[in-house]
Length: 223
Length: 223
DNA sequence: CCGCATCCCCAAAGATACTG
DNA sequence: CAGTATCTTTGGGGATGCGG
Image 1 (cartoon, rainbow over the protein chains, first blue to last red):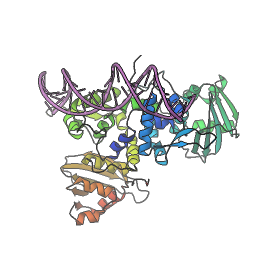
Image 2 (image 1 turned 90 degrees about the vertical axis):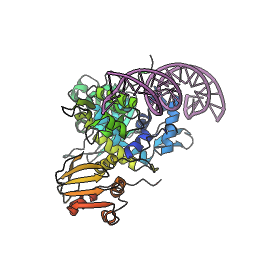
Image 3 (image 1 turned 45 degrees about the vertical axis):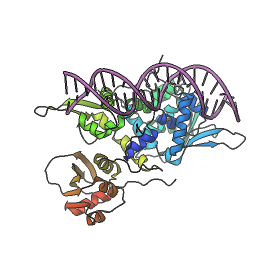
């Protein structure tokens, strides 16, 4: 009776890890946090995981009920993967993990950081303001990627990849998505970025400022 | 350029997983949530992980700053492992993971569940009451294990393994720790357990009831 | 081109035995 | 008690192939 590959515990933590604890599993789920993706999209986002690994994880996660495989209606008959309702409830786990990891004594340096990850940082480190709540829609351009953000009464209610041309209250255009990361990390200010040309702001500048002010990425702990 | 064993991303989630994403790592940390443990304690709690695995993970986690190895002052010159301040800040991650796993469509059945895990469920599913906050200390006996619980103004401020004989306001004695799990899951009530002799209550019965009433373990989602 | 399946290789995981 | 040493097994990483 060799190892059963599960932890064999009724503990809900162990059970969670049985489902999403395998290597790459959480990162696959992370890639679906901003909306459905195709196999090749996932492969492009996670190049270090081979296609076999990806297929394996997608099968497992589908079996557990974390995501579903769906075929889009014609004419766009593409197969997409998307989180189930229950799978999307991993959000608090990501939030806690990201907040913990951001405070690591030895932060990772000089590594890849995708536009998606930068935008997810917005959701992760967004803090609902106790006073002066506001409402606004935003378009955020990160290089070639475009995102739609919606804040209602100080709550971040929407954050998706988008292709719509609906006008937003404010549009933030970053040529380099790392500039946006520096912004959310508090390493640079909106004004500084605009001055050095890393950010173009269209529309309601005050709304843009409110959004950025609500994001507080913690700094590493002193060792 | 062989595999770097890390995800190679600056994303805080990926970085967290680089540190605590390896197999057994999270469960090792879980074992330290109720206080320091010796190597042999950990091995007894995680028998499926061999001593080599355990030693490896402890080394890794120490290197990352999640836990420290410390030698107790004489005469009890035992080596113990305990979470660092930063390591103990994984608590929200465990909370989120446990809450998610508890709602799994296909819950794990008939598997091991340690007394420690049962007590940790108390912390995980404890909800601070919005009204009528109270304060009390508790002794909880789960088979041979004893735990000290402290609630101050409705906040669960302490939950540790203990050996003290300080009298508590209320003492709950379970011969079988699974009875306590059934209680926190809402499958049985305090009164039922007492009636069938699975629970003996000493001291302030009202305080005991308040504690149990504040624990709400969610049920699996309908599929 | 998209969505995998297959194959090979090596690094972790797992089991067992043993030692300071 | 607190691990290390050794050996076997398994799963991950990488490349390639192949049907739809």
